[in-house]
Length: 255
Image 1: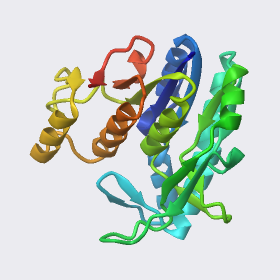
Image 2: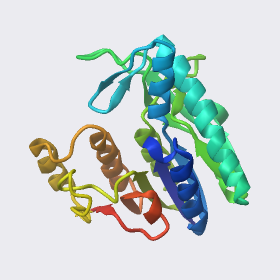
Image 3: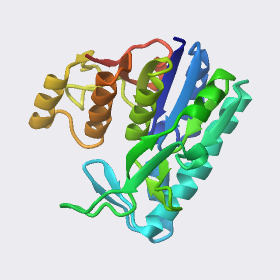
Image 4: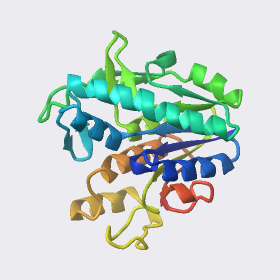
């Protein structure tokens, strides 16, 4: 099977021109088939604030009201997505921007209310990669925004880490998939205040222990939850790293 590298990138990496350009330069250096999944939460928060819409987060996950859904659709599916696509085209990579609604790529249901009402947040039901595979095999780079749909016309906000994991898992049936979660740090840090305290290899048991101790917290938890799930379902390698290292493979490797 051919190699496919799935890169999930979020945070200020995709939202500031300097770091986005550095990421796309590194992305170009990766050989073989590529797919990019992005977030854009900081921009969504900023635009929502300018529109007078309150942002609520629980353990790194966004509560999505009807008003916030409109904001994230504009930001994720529009502004951030097309900026990345344009940047890839400028580097000679043919790219297409997609959401989970396009090609019926990712169908989801609105998360049921238990302890917390997350609003218009989608939990993934089905991933359909048949058209995606055609694009990849034609050397097109899909750029996927973290939006899904319920098959009845309702868009849903879905965690970008989850989307990357779900796509990587499904595509692992057709490619040797390497999943990289890319953010501002060089990897998972044992001490958040020390940039050099990188945990180079992390097992699921260590992850649980670090999470219980509070060493790993907030947005890193869904990232690692999804990473370990992908690893268990056939993804060859999962790496947590920064933009500078995606072409070299340095960072925190899940084992």
